Length: 264
Image 1 (cartoon, rainbow, N blue to C red):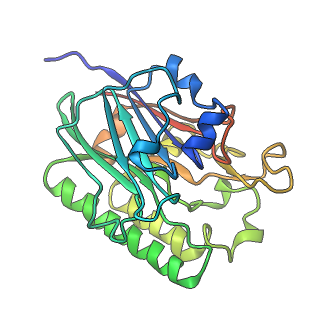
Image 2 (cartoon, rainbow, N blue to C red):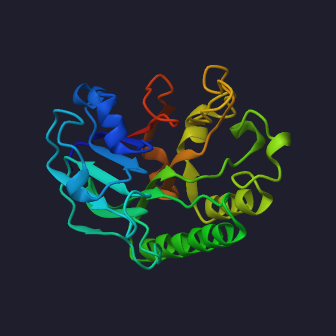
């Protein structure tokens, strides 16, 4: 029997990877011993990702870019060798550069790993409709992979705070996309299908723990935030979770990174 290994995964919505590079806000990655790093809202094509973001040379880079330049975009850096990668076109049907899907063999598990920038529904009603359809397509895709024997790890900006504890001002945002009943109910449905919110699994009902703050009204300094960035795992990986935490000390974006450590 092979000895189990510890893995560290980090997810961060960087809100523009070129802007983050100018701030040198990813240099901490060099010393962080990260096995898989998922970045969202990179706003860059593959050739536009600066080589200077950190010194570490990851063996694999998988990029998904929006058909419209300067929008969305995700990038998955890995020292692990995937045996399959795609941009999940059956979910990201508008080709907005929202998903990296990569399959890895970790221990005795076949892992389908997702780095996702879920749509924001605030701009107009059509985008909220698209967001909810995207959610449902994503769940269906994950369920099909589970039927094939895959274990699931999902990281990214889900663009919804699940419970009142997940944002500083729930009452004021009850009618705001990102905390609408339909959005929160989808997370309920997702979890009911056998997925685990790793942060809550480790930290219980810890309060005042957020991953996004508006640039307005000194929100971050006052910790008036939202927890909208998550790591989810399928139920079969629940006992492998060793730690899950929010890296609020890392600056450079309106989001901060979130982390998951597992043993497989």
